[in-house]
Image (cartoon, rainbow, N blue to C red):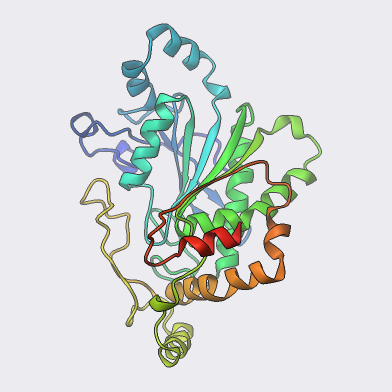
Length: 313
C-alpha cells in the first residue's frame, strides 16, 4: 500500500475538477493504490475527512447537515470512523451516481467510503495484453477483493470496523471473497490491530441469470471459443451505455460492447458456478462465520431472478 496520500492534482481524484461546488458533489480526498499479489496495480479512491485535497470533501457536507458541536466531536474522532469498502459492477468505476449516492450517506453518518476500481476499470491497470474492462478470470478478481479488504483494514487500523459492499458483479465478488476475508483475519496473530469485520451489504448481486437471457447454446460455444483468441474484443456481446456516469462526460467507465472474455466469465459465473455451488452446498462453506448480511434486490429484475439470489443465501 502507498501509505502516503497520492499527490495527484484534484482532477485525477474521483469527481475532482468537475465543478463539485456547483453540482454539490463530494470529491475523493486521496487515492490509496496497491499492487496485488499477481502484480496488478489497482486504484482505490478514498472519501474521508483527514486525507487532504479534494475541495468537496466529506467535512464540508457533514458540517452543513449536522449540529456544529456534533460535527466537531466526530471530526476529532475521525480515525475511528467505520469503513465501507465498495466494489463496483462490470464496466463501471468510482465515478458513478451510485458511488456518489453512497458518499453522501457515508458523509452524513460518519463513515469512510473506500472504492476499489477493478483491474482494467477506471484508473486501475490490467494484466499484460488485456484491454479495458477485460476480466477473463473471476477468481483473480475475488483474490483482488480479499487483498483490498486486507490492505485497507490494515491502513485504517484505528477504525472501529468495516463492512464490504458490492453492486452487480461487485456483489458476486464480495460474496465469494467472504471465505478469503475471514481466513485472512483468522491467520492474523494481532487481531486487536485490525478493525472488526461487520459483514457484507450487496446491491443486486449477480448471483444467477434468467435462462431466457442466455443466447442459444451454439452461439455461447462459439463466443467462448472466440474469447480465448480475442479476449478484449466485443462481438455479439451486450452493449454498455454508461448513463450512470457521474459526471456524464467521465471517461472512467467503459462504453461499447463488452469484451468477449468478460461476457464469457459472467455467463459461466451466473449460469454454471452459482447454481452448482447452491446444489453442492459450497455456499454454506463460503458464508460460514459471516457476521451479518444485507441484500437489496429488485423482485422483477429481468436478468438476475430474485429466486436465484434467495436460493444462494
